[in-house]
Image (cartoon, rainbow, N blue to C red):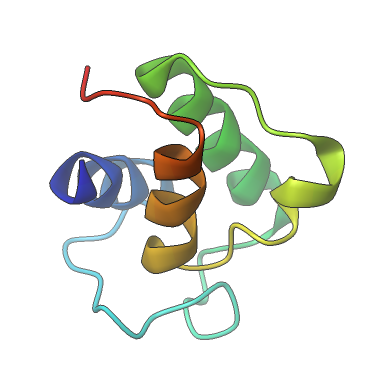
Length: 76
């Protein structure tokens, strides 16, 4: 699942690499519009839906993987 989320991040943010420590605050291309696209891509890929208050917490690879895992989503 982690690698699937990483691929989605790279695709949506149009990046070649992303580190384990990168966050919405450290990646210049990770703006509010791309954040919403990222959330929608993750929801679609894993068949989950996030609550509005969760969307702001999805600010790193770890946070996204954790949120998807809590939803009990299996790999697509």
